[in-house]
Length: 139
Image (cartoon, rainbow, N blue to C red; front, top):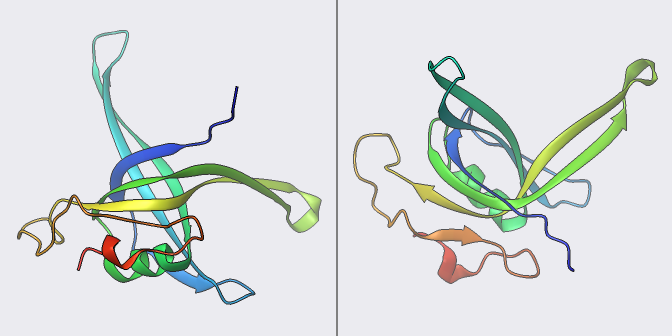
């Protein structure tokens, strides 16, 4: 049987995207996405919970995310989970799990009120080489 590492989330950005460049000059964008859920506890109480995801995108997907996403914006993100580790000060081992995005969709209106000028069902994502196809852009 083959392997599968795929994650899909719908949530809201907790802060504006942060874009920088890798050592080889490739764009990299990081965002934090809050995904809420509601459930009933064993005592019958309604509980609202939020799970935060660290999302990383590269290449054209990173550039598009940085340009068009803002804090509070609802978004669908699809990609793979990846855990990295590094040694910090005093030799302490650190771990971080990221959702490495290869596709995303704008959801809902841009500013939370007025209707947006593009179809929110349009997806933006990478092809096999990590480049965004021009036909995938929502503008």
